[in-house]
Amino acid sequence: MNENNTTSSSASGSQTLDPRPQTPAPPGSPGSPLLNVTDLHKHYHIGGQDLHVLQGVDLDVQQGEWVAVLGASGSGKSTLLHLIGGLDRPEQGSVSFEGRDIFKLPGAAIDRYRNRHVGFVFQSYHLLPELTALENVLIGAMIRSSILGWPGRRGEARKRAIELLNRVGLGERMGHRPGKLSGGERQRVAIARALVNEPDLLLADEPTGNLDTDTGKQIMELIAELHQQGQTIVMVTHDLEIAASADRRLWLREGALAGEEG
Image (cartoon, rainbow, N blue to C red; front, side, top):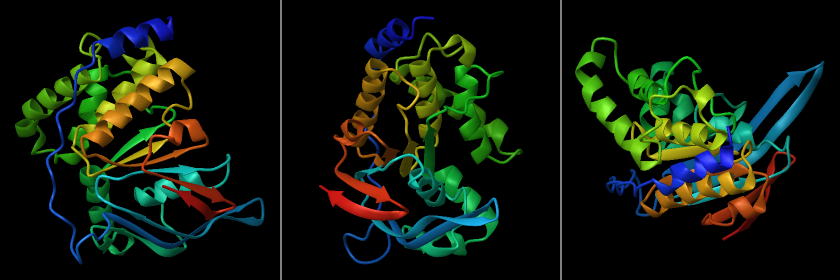
């Protein structure tokens, strides 16, 4: 499949996404951040040695802000994103969402945080190969619902998933499985899946890392459009050009934030 041609035709058919409704300000004083990361440490025990990946990271993210975290491979970018999303736990420090430390919540509440407030976009898409594009998007909504509650929510979730796939330019491809889609189309499916539950926070881990330059630009245009409509985004990348559209750019070096540019 010619990825450039296929993805370009999909992009030309994309529509403007609906603006996100304004959500209430988080608890605390005016201007309190949506996300607050404080003194975050993470290490792994590998081959008899301790690898200190994060060593005291501090980060505030305001509602509606787009923050890009840059750094070389192995600098701790993905680890930071996984901790923010509640996919892993730190040895020290906190990740607070709307004023509440997610790591002080019981396990079921952390699961709800991930399912209801966070959308993930990964470099490798993580689509289920046996499911169609539409079914992959629906997975996110299905996980959020209880087994008993899903039949009642299925129709509304399906309508939302179809709307999102149309608006990322895949209205005519939603019945295709990932093996029949180009890399750019797979990433568009992944973005639609991340948005199906209308998350407060979108986490993107090298979202263009597996794409050619032209397709990567189309994905970044889509992410920029989401930001313009109010989506809060934390994105990690090694590419300064990719990060250029963000409100702020920060650098991770040897597990610590080494600089910032607005």
